[in-house]
Image (cartoon, rainbow, N blue to C red; front, side, top):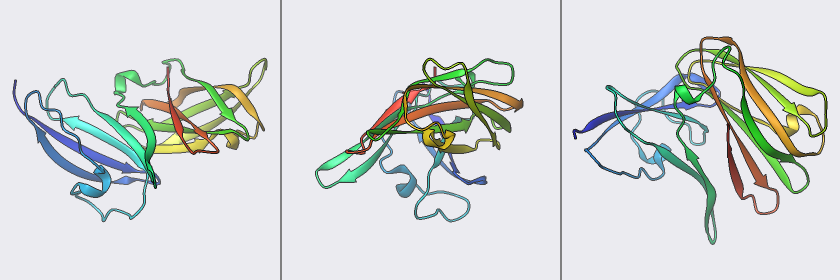
Length: 201
């Protein structure tokens, strides 16, 4: 029933200690689209790089029922293609001793490739433990990725060195630190480059 001041914090991949911030206010019941956000919004902080990737942290000064979603896209001659990305809260993320997040039906083949994204959501550092589990396998291929507060990183499924992977499963947990981690998969058609977003469960 009242307006809500909103702070947008852009944490750039590879530069999480120098976030860029922007503020706006939403009226009660307002739905607003911020088109081409990273380039069109006015940001405080260091100059924005011409090309970047990262995570966007959306916060309010008081408790609210704010909902945020995003779409990343590529501009093609005939239009755009991309993927819808829902916001994730710290309570939907995993912390130390909190079990595993699951990413299902991932693929690394001549037809599809997969990117795996990780983000710290609580503003505290954490080390994420990521394991690739192949169908009918008793073994997992694992790696640890340290994340600073609010840091975003992305790795490829191919980087696990498992060769061709069909119907792969990746688990994500927190090995150390007080932070909380979320994850996603993006399965990309090698011919059309069309991506499919895979949320962690």
